[in-house]
Length: 233
Ligand code: GDP
Image (cartoon, rainbow, N blue to C red; front, side, top):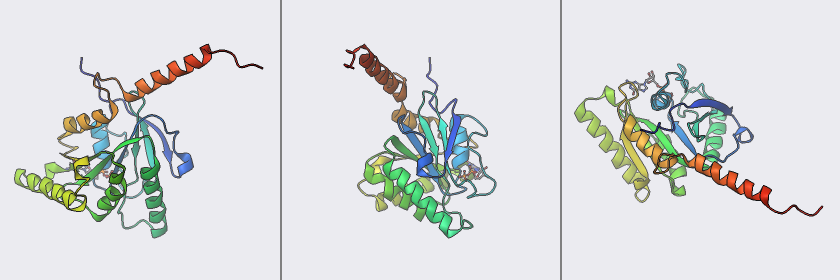
């Protein structure tokens, strides 16, 4: 029987506007990032097969916190605030950049980053900055080149090629960590390939979740502790 993908049955967990509001790290976590309006919320909703899980905001830049979702099996998805929206005051922008950069650099549970890029615009400076901060950690990136439905076949190939060249130029050694997937939330293009990549991060070969395994290990460790000799009073 096909195993449901971890993103199916995702549910909202909490928001964090500061480091001390982050949920306890433990279960593996994937983060979704992208410029405002790139199509990040639509991509998350398409992958989760829900229409309004991540809120596709009418006002870009309004969502100024990390939104956490719990996935099937207990893994977490962190929806990072969209960046690059001009109307956000500079001070707030700095606060967000610092918060997100710190989160990406220090979050132990993070197993990979999904970066949503509007295929028509390609890799922006802020996308490069984000990758430059993340790739040295050696963790993988899923780059969803979205809104492909807005391009014809030839333009789709050019857009993908341009993104791959830009990655190779900017990150020669680490470019192989980035898996580019042509994507469209509206036409549901690239969903299977994106699921496969996210599944590699979150699932074991037999389809069980990494979290379930971690929980089993923890449970057997704690059973071991309770069965052990009582400490002397
Ligand atoms: P976010 O700010 O990155 O979360 O972007 P949204 O998901 O809110 O999308 C921004 C706009 O692009 C909205 O009007 C979406 O309907 C549209 N959009 C997002 N993904 C796609 C896509 O794959 N194809 C098309 N044609 N439009 C999309």
